Image (cartoon, rainbow, N blue to C red; front, side):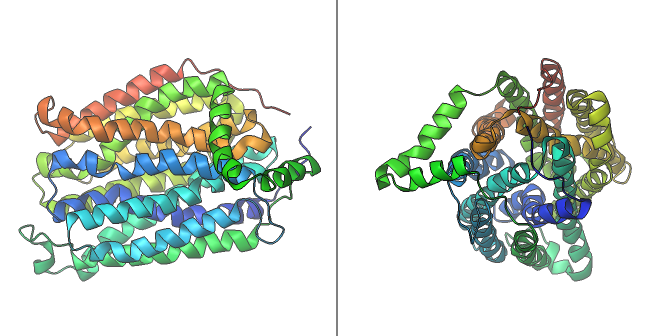
Length: 436
């Protein structure tokens, strides 16, 4: 029986505030990192491989940190909090340093460290939300998370074109110079402050639930093991959890393969697409991409909580499937719209899809995995995200160069087709029944 107390709206709100800072950082990665690589001399076919940091660090860091946090408890610091505090601090330091990157490979190295910090913060945070909420509030909790995901990315993208408007000069938008525009620095500074400040807010406002007697005995037993056994324990936990993984998660993995491959295509090639389709220079394309991403994340904020009653009425599966097809339609439409303002309309559909993608799968999975292994399973769910991203970073450069004629437009269209395939595969999902 689920004995966790119901939380109020503001308790759930405060618990999720930290996602604002984490997702501000993620928003900069979506929109600004690849243009920075371009400013520093990267070619379009180089972009997928330069983004390898996200998939690799996510694949390694999140499940390991999840497994470790499952076996952690401190009466003073809690179970999950120490991990996302350290991750947020590491991310903040990298964001401060990023715009000072003197060369391409320095920026790539910073991206690796930034992704380690973000992944260290992200997975325990998702498990933290699941730890606190009873099953009948999980959908609301994870959709509130989606709201802050959208808000963080909105602020990140809005800051890019606002600071460009306020601080750019003719010299800062000269594409012949392989330097990062100074107006872009301020977005990274703001992200560094928000990363640590919002996490600190959630940590101070939300106490963790102490482990049960049985869980505490298991944690103490783990602490008593020899050092080598404690080091290998997370890897054993991950292996066992994958072996015992519910069939629902295996089917979800096939959906995620196409969904996240397509999303990585979009984030890497939306800015180059505007250079190709509308003739924008690099700075204009970056600004347009920031407006696009701002628009879809405003839509995410507006629709995130509205999806909760729809998921309760129709089931999470139906809402999730619809979201995938709406996103497919939006991406397939973008290259054929020549009005920079009108193209923003498609982002409303994209935003609805993003709101569902960032909340509903997590709530469905959280209901069916054991409480004491929630951390490791949230890490495995993230593995299902980063493996497609890793495949994309390795395979898509040659695909763009040799099959898609080095065309960013063709890359975006392929991303839309992959979302259609993801929607069709999602029809195979069976709505999970919550574990007691």
